[in-house]
Length: 205
Image 1 (cartoon, rainbow, N blue to C red):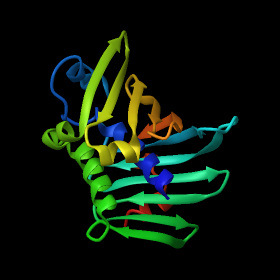
Image 2: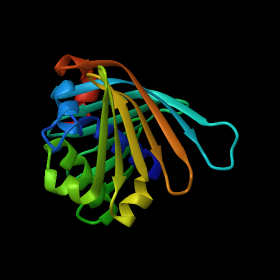
Image 3: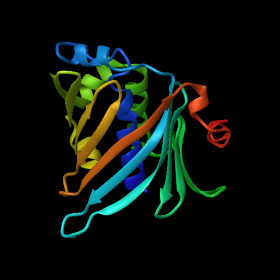
Image 4: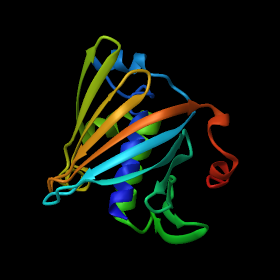
């Protein structure tokens, strides 16, 4: 479950540049380079290298980020499952069955994760500055950004994050304190209401 939550935090970071949340150059320039859709969906390919293992764990699926609603992360391979993050809860679905539900009012970790997620979505500068050290650079039509958690608890949960992209985030890497590293590549990005299937839309109802 923790790894799934971490992945949703990474997807939430897609919106870090798509909202007016950063101050200072070149971060403001990077923000201006990115598209700002209300709905963003696409394919992800993930490779997770665990410390001590030779071969990385591979998975793929679909993601959707919906402003004001949350994040949907649907793993298709190797095992189907769905994670939905909203302001009030985190729900782990296996098929139509709810495998786990975490209430933000009762679980401190959920409150922290949702605080980060919705600060990114809403562009809450004060919250982001309290949680992350941000550094960015521009190379032609591409950019890269590094996020380093300030708080030990957050650093332990998600480690450090780097992102690369152009109009959209293309690659995202998270390095955990344990030495585990997750690399996600995003492709087939679509925007607007039509980007989300009817089934995906129902998961936000």
